[in-house]
Length: 395
Image 1 (tube, rainbow, N blue to C red):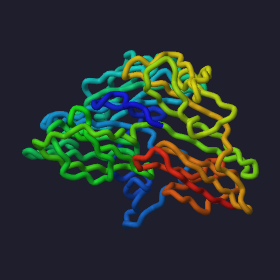
Image 2: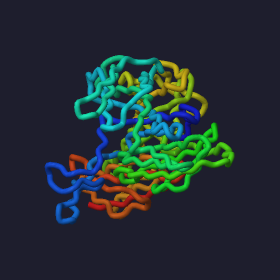
Image 3: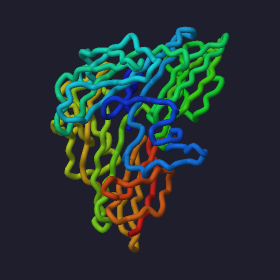
Image 4: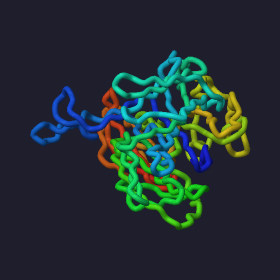
């Protein structure tokens, strides 16, 4: 699915699920040993394992950090916070101690209008933005607020002559970092997509395939080079995620649930998923209101009529598409085979109860739902939006 960028070259939208998230560094805790992204290290240096993976999706947040003028020690952050807790009337964004926020503004992504918020400072030096939702989160819906703020942190943003260093532990979400204009990358310790924004600034975009923390260090230097804008779309910006819930393999059927934010302007949203997935029992829900949207045939495709038209760059339609598919799923000589082309950054396939994964043709993580069903979670780190995957499993 390809859609235009929301905020031109300056600021991008991100998604952070289920209220506040605290980012913390390494340290000793009540369990003993030292925490690290994959678990804990015991006092004798041996690794203590983390628990089994149960989360169907990682990379739930896209956050962009735009470095401001060197010497300011400041960087602008743009992202979206969500809460799926029915009845919630506010969303809290708690931030780490030592990173003071200024230039804060909060908007309703459904309408693009400002919402009320407070900015509280705790006794431990941590800060929190408490944003009031336009209306309580409905049952089956998701509340959202779009936050812009600037952090100042001398530990993160350092200057040495004409060189700058930006170092920060970033939780395992989808991420973007933009250099100040007139600066070029010297090095970055994490593999990333690189592009030039319309105003000539350089940008990295990346994600951790396993959803773990990214301990990022960027070195950059002043340059006289004139960079030409790149045609690349930030592949990590799109928040689309698709869940394939496989039924009994002899039926060849699976339930599909796809959620995403659509920034395309207009009174209707085109259902791109139907270009590559034939779905019966199609249903589209506006996640802001939890109300089903009317479907309208449009040429060879399908659109839904939006409750609020998209007219400005702070707006998105937050949609959930569900249906039943059957293409590419079968039982072959007693072996479950899921063999089809997937689209988008994040796809998770949940196997029927009792089946164990025996082969996956693409890099993936394996886990179990809380009900004990095996699942395969795939993160597409290539710029191509689609890829072929084959999953095999047996009882």
